[in-house]
Amino acid sequence: MSVINFKEANCRNCYKCIRYCPVKAIKVNDEQAEIIEYRCIACGRCLNICPQNAKTVRSDVERVQSFLNKGEKVAFTVAPSYPALVGHDGALNFLKALKSLGAEMIVETSVGAMLISKEYERYYNDLKYDNLITTSCPSVNYLVEKYYPDLIKCLVPVVSPMVAVGRAIKNIHGEGVKVVFIGPCLAKKAEMSDFSCEGAIDAVLTFEEVMNLFNTNKIGVECTKENLEDVDSESRFKLYPIEGKTMDCMDVDLNLRKFISVSSIENVKDILNDLRAGNLHGYWIEANACDGGCINGPAFGKLESGIAKRKEEVISYSRMKERFSGDFSGITDFSLDLSRKFIDLSDRWKMPSEMEIKEILSKIGKFSVEDELNCGACGYDTCREKAIAVFNGMAEPYMCLPYMRGRAETLSNIIISSTPNAIIAVNNEYEIQDMNRAFEKMFLVNSAMVKGEDLSLIFDISDFVEVIENKKSIFNKKVSFKNYGIIALESIYYLEEYKIAIGIFTDITKMEKQKESFSKLKRENYQLAQQVIDRQMKVAQEIASLLGETTAETKVILTKMKDMLLNQGDDE
Image 1 (spheres, rainbow, N blue to C red):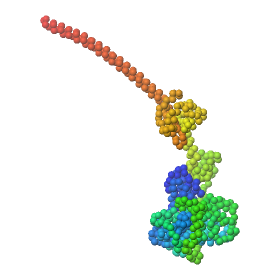
Image 2 (cartoon, rainbow, N blue to C red; image 1 turned 45 degrees about the horizontal axis):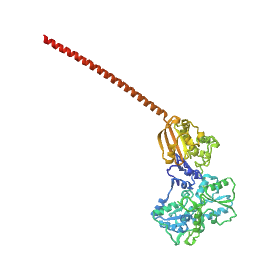
Image 3 (spheres, rainbow, N blue to C red; image 1 turned 90 degrees about the vertical axis):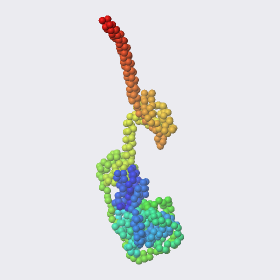
Image 4 (cartoon, rainbow, N blue to C red; image 1 turned 180 degrees about the vertical axis):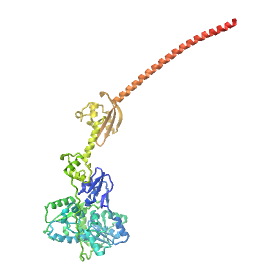
């Protein structure tokens, strides 16, 4: 697992991490950000600005807890920036809490600063080196190794204070001691595994992780006024985490070289570019990735104090010499190897041809230089830089907010302009703001001529008044616009955010006419059917009347015939 990365999150249209990444080591694939380890300098800036807090950091907490639970000999080495975390009055309390965790010893990393300062002095005085860059900051070292390999010759080949104190502890107390570094730097987690630093440090905890460890073990950082007899510290070197203070830790002729301190990756890159261009000579350069130095590291956790207050706390703490009585005895009585090597770790991007760049840009509607807005919303400084990232598989073509917005607006406009429904927008003063072509056609108006005019010029606005005043929508109300010979279904809704009412009218005139024609036809057919029924009834009645008459006549005749036959029988 890499030292830092992102967990799954909704990265769509954000790209904030890319904007803040000084080396563009973040890849976006399927709208998910991912840190590419071989390009990353572990500055941690992207994690702290992620709006979704989607960070994952490799943690050594369980490993350290395991050391302590097994009763192993553990040495904590604490970066001298910790007073910026707890205040100078809380510094001793912090160290006491570390002791309560079960540490065998506590050695401030200021001891390591003292050690490497002696090595720095040697290189400073050797004028065969033109320009030299301090190497206490691993993020700066990675920046040079990965992006300025031609300037590796400028890096002082000396380990950082963390590695120096780790080697010293193991040299004095044996390789069996577990050395745990505690500080505000995420890059230290990567540095401990570097090929020329390996073995000096067994685990790295951030200040944030240590405070969580205190909570887990129910250890309070309580006030104490007592001296700490067994804390090794070097007062002069406690200022090391403040920008510009490394020079104060060296006994050198200040006139021998020009000195400059730079902090923040952007400023460091400026210096490196000047070095690459051959513009600087005879410089001793103190370089820090974090603005203001280590007192502004990315792993302090949430601090309310700013850089000025943190600096004040570290300075105040450095004056508390009388409250530390421990020393790192024998520190100069042995030969300690503090050297390290830096190697070319660069992975140069493939450079697309001009035609390939144009092809990528054309996919997002950029066909000329004028189309290249270079807005930086995608995280890259220029459109061409992003096109190169796309070519190298580090970005997606459609990570262009102006293009996607324009495309969405175009689609929206196409939909609105092509819909057969009439649409109009009016403000709170009932002034016409916009309308589509269907509205112009339905109500026989010209948008350019009536825009800004009162809606009442077109039709009765009582429904719009009701919606705007009551903030209640109307849906599918049948309205007759007699002046225009139109019957429409009217829907009006209010957009509070924009203080605009939107009216949508669906022409149902033809439908209503068809309904009316059908109703008329039904009435006519009904009347016709009724007439047929009436005629049939009349015929039936007439037939019945005739049948009645003939039946009566037949009865009379038959009766007469019967009587006559009977009478004839009697005579015989």
